[in-house]
Image 1 (tube, protein in one colour):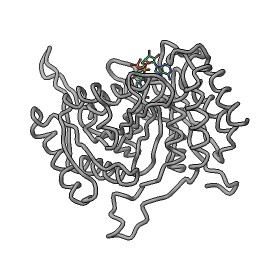
Image 2 (cartoon, helix red, strand yellow):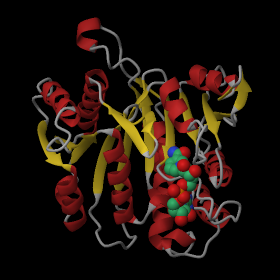
Image 3 (cartoon, rainbow, N blue to C red):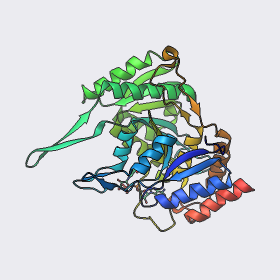
Image 4 (cartoon, rainbow, N blue to C red):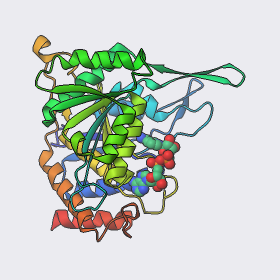
Length: 359
Ligand code: NAD
């Protein structure tokens, strides 16, 4: 918090629809008088020592503020491109990706009782980026699983369950096939579970979970699901589909050195620049940020070391106000964007939320 009483937060508008949805969040925040000062930075790669890297100004801003809101970044497909998302995750050690997905009351979808929380290991697994061509026509991609990263994300999942009142943690896996890698992920989860006797723990196969969640999401609503990287990526999009799509699902990349909040969706090049994007996912991500309890030091066991693991941004009241205005705008259905079946532009939808906030 700065001397002006405002929290300084890094804002990375991103690519495609990123700038449009970021504008919307900024407009809503200023209407709601949230005491936040945005420090806007670009992460467009620059050349440094023959390599493309994220500009120092962006890295330094996130380092200083330790919290950032980020729009989607387009990753060009093909050789020689670094994924900026992966770079950010590695730079700030963003080890857990939290993806809540809850039905919006009044907004009609096949189910009205989805309330899942997925926690995805965010630094390794299939996203380690270790790929090579062994011989012509044969490529190997390495799924790297380490005990440390598995244990760290498992511990975060149990902390999250405890602090959010969820009674069970389920580790989602394919250890029947990936016996060693997913097997070790499970062992780490099992070991951590012993530290949390008040939280139930079980394990379930990814394919089974997919089938069950689409058939009846209710049993998955009072728990936290924790899993290796790729499974979380896919399962969370599936859950998003159950509540109305990618325009609605937020996420938080929780790290040791900083935390970066972002929508689950990408840069949506098909609708970019047209004023059609739904800003809700980024907006809800920003609300996760307002409610966020900084667990910077949680990896050090506070009871043992005496370090204080929690630092509150303490803006929950603002989060509740904005959330109510947003969800009731969606539930009314009069001014919603095309992805939700409406006809409103990003601006019209944003203004409808602002009208509720300032009424
Ligand atoms: P996408 O999420 O950008 O789009 C998938 C579909 O959902 C599109 O039809 C799009 O129009 C729609 N959609 C997504 N967000 C929406 C919103 N807010 N409002 C309305 N409709 C929305 O996925 P993609 O097309 O596979 O990826 C596009 C680019 O984004 C790629 O370069 C990819 O690498 C990148 N990406 C980035 C992130 C990130 O920065 N975290 C995440 C996923 C994808």
